Structure formats: structure tokens, C-alpha cells
Length: 110
Ligand code: HEC
Figure 1 (cartoon, rainbow, N blue to C red):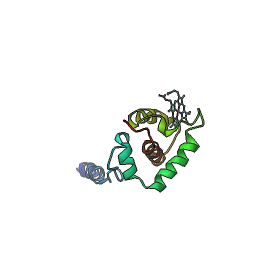
Figure 2 (figure 1 turned 180 degrees about the vertical axis):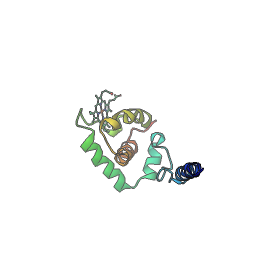
Figure 3 (figure 1 turned 45 degrees about the vertical axis):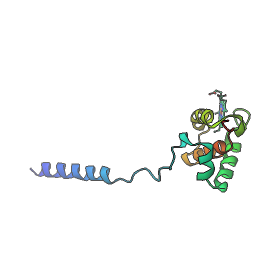
Figure 4 (figure 1 turned 120 degrees about the vertical axis):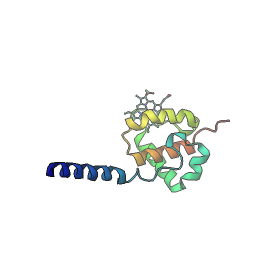
């Protein structure tokens, strides 16, 4: 009897713990991979874009030449960044800033 009480009590604590655990911190207004050039320029400060540029220069030219942000339009960059950010071993925050810099300076679509 006691064991049943203890076990169901434990279950309740675990269930509450899961239900009450904080949701992922501050979901960005726009999914990173959907970011357009216009939205990147609105959503990030010039200080953040500058930080993204410094990170790009530091992390994206070690295996190959540093590609210019203006080389591709945003959709192509998202495909490339989804492959390259893991290679560059960036933190989530660094990845966001690199993406923000590159997309903000990407080639205009038309
Ligand atoms: C660990 C090594 C490594 C790092 C760090 C790295 N890359 Fe790459 N990159 C590669 C390799 C290998 C290729 C060629 C194979 C491929 O495209 O997946 C490549 C290809 C590319 C291409 C050409 C892709 C295409 O489709 O034409 C671009 C652009 C690029 N990388 C950008 C970046 C950016 C931006 C970063 C920083 C976030 C970065 N890379 C970091 C290894 C790396």
C-alpha cells in the first residue's frame, strides 16, 4: 500500500515537473531558417550584425576561402548555413548572429 502511494506520488511529481518546465527560451519572432533580408535588417541591431560579421570572419574562412555574404540570395544561404554552422561548431547564439549578418548582406533576390 505504502509503495503504491510513494510510486504514484513520484509519478505526480515527475508529471508536474514536465508540465511546468519552462518552454524553450525566447522563441525568435521568425524561424531562423525563414529569415529574409528585410526581416534580418529589422530584427537585429547594427551591433548584432557587426558581431555576426566578426564571427563569420573568425569561423567561416578556416576550411576554405571566406565567401562574401553578397554572393548568394537568402534561400541559398539558408541551405548552405544549415550545413556549415554545425561544421563551424558555433553555439546557437553565434549561429543566429552569423545568419543575421549573412542574410542582412545577402544578394537581393531581384
Ligand atoms: C570544418 C570545415 C568548414 C567550416 C568551419 C566551414 N565550412 Fe563551408 N564548406 C566546407 C566544405 C568541406 C565545403 C564543400 C562541401 C559542401 O558544400 O558541403 C564547404 C562549402 C561551403 C560553401 C559553398 C557551398 C555551395 O553550395 O556552393 C559555402 C558558401 C560555405 N562553405 C560557407 C561557409 C560558412 C558561411 C561557414 C561559417 C558558418 C563555413 N562555410 C564554415 C567546410 C567548412
